[in-house]
Image 1 (cartoon, rainbow, N blue to C red):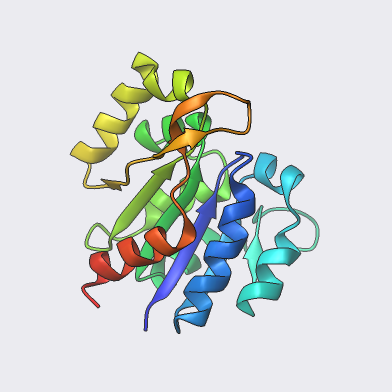
Image 2 (cartoon, helix red, strand yellow):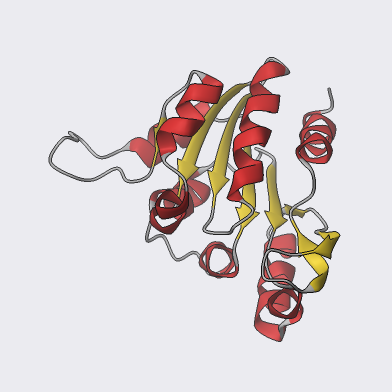
Amino acid sequence: MAKIVLAAGASVAIYKACDLASKLAQAGHSVRAVLTPRAAQLVNPQLFEAVTGEPASVDEFGPARRGAMDHIELAKWAELLLVAPASAGLIARLAHGQADDLASTLALALPANRPRLLAPAMNPTMLDARPVQRNLALLREDGWLVLEPAVGHTACGDDGKGRLPEPAELVAAVARALRL
């Protein structure tokens, strides 16, 4: 099976990312989670470690770190990068090459021949916003596979397109990308 980096942005849908990480690991994949700093305010990275048996990271800098090359190590290790949930802010950073956290720096360091999947999750109005749509178009042009958000009731109380697809659907998308 594959070595997968699951990068999680700051979206309420991060609760599904924990289940997704578990399901990917149960399918036999090695899964290492990378959370943006804001995502780590929503869910403790240790939860991802518990369900995958692999390390989870938020930042590669700090007094406990030596060398600070986690983005390079993870990029070499990963056979596939899955960004789920992808918040509007994380999408913008990825689209414009703004490497200001471990997730976005890792994405730049990932070899071009590795599959990159992105699953947006946000309020339907935010998803429809022209800047978000431009950023998604840029990512598609750069070779990212942008997975369609699900339609339904969102955490903010609105109904529409913007929900993170169910973990089983994301696991199937990973299998297709890996041609398993």
